[in-house]
Length: 225
Length: 368
Picture 1: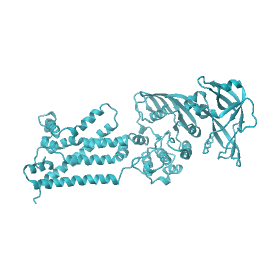
Picture 2: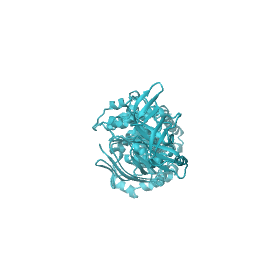
Picture 3: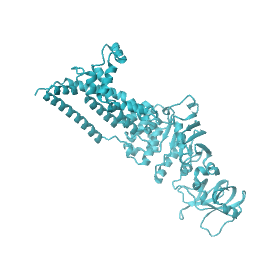
Picture 4: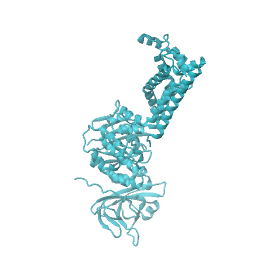
């Protein structure tokens, strides 16, 4: 059997890893704010972060394409600043993936922070811990399970994305051609053997990751109570 | 010794708090009142947990809350023992204690990590996980953890409310020792009179978000206008006396109130020890002369200091003087009319039962 081109697979994993890291940094404060705010804006922000769950990827991809194109204000600024375009580039894919996977990071984290609640944070403050200290020493460890779930869901969801990537990135080998697009191409050109190999790799990989997480969660339940 | 001065307001749709009071920087002050009177809210305002509070709080020269300023909770140096302990579930008991200890490592202190372990008997618990402890153990660890943060003021929010009577009895001696052993003043929120009389040096009573009364435990509890805070059923007075004799065969202790004597079920303390007895108004009856042939053994000569009739009920409260201390009797208005009771009259008080805890603590002798 002819081995399929594995380049897109590595590109996909790189994209998912970078996107997950970025979303850990961006998603934490958003989830924290949503979990603890009493602001009336909460519903608005919640709705916006949940949008990628319901919008067809083509809609999101279309707006991103418009927003990132060198003719737009942001895309133009990026071109002037870096000399590269955001559309049809790896960087552009990261921006698109981060938006597309945002709810998969924010929602589990928000739930986890709400589960932690204000009570342990007040206790930490009464023991001289600053809010930042209390976050790292109390809230984050107590929300560990939420972090694990959010990380895995974000990573897996980014690996599985197709429509947004196609709209924003196209299928430039080595730059924007991720594995889901390659599988689509193999099928289009009736190269079922290669499509099978890649699809099987993706299936086994996704299953293994999820199995590992659920096993870990069962074996090491975070003690709360 | 640093006083805490508060003049604060909090407004919620259904409730408002408006309290101005200076808490002395020593001993245990009870913040006392029925559920919903605002005592826990006031404690949270002092700790800095209620961001909507306005007014002024200062601790010595330090401004904690002002018109333009708000010192965040973690910089106030205030310890807080919560009703539900709030131990960190992801840490062991030792981890919880070290959490506080590490964050206060640079502060001047009168006691070590091991001192706290010793006083609160925490050594057997150190390697246990917080969620596996019993309620009483959790509260002991929580008190220890708070002390290790080297607080300048210790706030306790109904720390015994979630515990059964036996566990309460186990923990009360530890709490009583805190101000002397660790040099930290305590503000203690409770709605339990028993805890006030056993633990506290003075009372700040709240009612519907306002100060109702403040002062020493005995004189504040006997004030008639406090009845609404306590609830009529529990209303009573606290008498301070000294054990003069023990009858081991009959299991009785004789307590001298400074002239008058009380006979009570045996208290496990040596003769000469000071005790506090709480006498509920509903357990006190009045007579014009000493009756004969009665089972009631506590028959005291008293003088009527005041009579407060309740026009809407059958009852009246009579404030009495017994050997310079106060006693209250709750009797029917009809009885007062029949006996012709007047202010200044000398009568006889019959006390059916005296409530005190078997684990009642000896009052620590004041250093003269």
